[in-house]
Length: 414
Image (cartoon, rainbow, N blue to C red):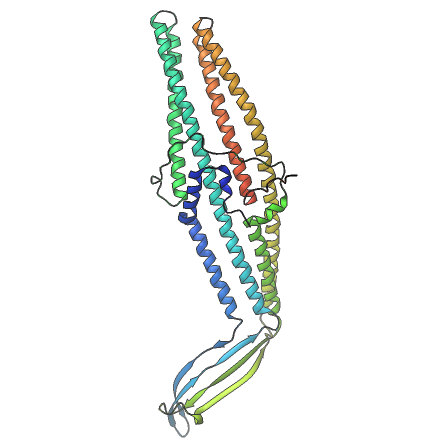
């Protein structure tokens, strides 16, 4: 079984609340739940064929006999009973197929829920990444405003040229434009989260939080046996079972059908005295029906069921291979992105040292303001790059958790 609360590894209460809203409000999940109810009804229909069918008939007919030309009215009240004896497994095969389809439908719902939960986590991670990026840009804009003010003072004093002031203005306005674009992205991510939980785009308001998301510890290796709890793999396996059962149904059609039937009731020409011992009639007996010629209909049905079974087997195998591919890819990606984040953090430290040195050189008149702009751009790019790598790592871990349909096992102690 899949883990029902795997996202709690990220240790974010806001994310936990959004996941609760998702299960209750997502309309795609509601549609999938309705399909499960349809499959349950189909199982009930198939199970009904296991029991006898009892009807109640009340009839009236008017007839005329020639040559005496005697006209009369006949009344009847009867209760016919019929039951197909499942000699060749046709009825039980129909039940097994319907039950397997129901199980596959339930797994489809679980897969849809898992996919929606994973999409919610990824969107939420992107939104929190935008919060971090905005915080960095806010600091950069403040720093660039101070740099512009300082450069303008130096220009008024005749220490630097107007080109330095123009470069400082360009640096500030570029950061301001980036901040406006990021605010738009952040708003759109909030709208996407609202729709996922079944609300209108503007109904959900999430306050900025930085930082807010924890980083789960990554395992060194994972067993592919964990893929068996994935709902898409389970659904594909259940469809193989349903196809096998349906194939058995088509093979049973080549044998005669045995039906037991009985009928009892009353028949008389006088409605007032219809129910009476003298008007009782009954019949009971078996019926054996064998199709002699159907123009190849049964063979075509069997060939169709065999092809459907083969297709379901191939789909199941491909689903397993795809699951293995996703598991390996995201495990490697998460591990490599952790190393990349360490290197990017070192690059950020180097960029900050370089900026500090360059600003000191500029104040001493050793370099032009272009060197300061270059150092500031490198520092901002390195810091935003670190946030991007960290977010990509979290997204890869989220994909890995989705691939496993839950958490990975805790390492054994000893």
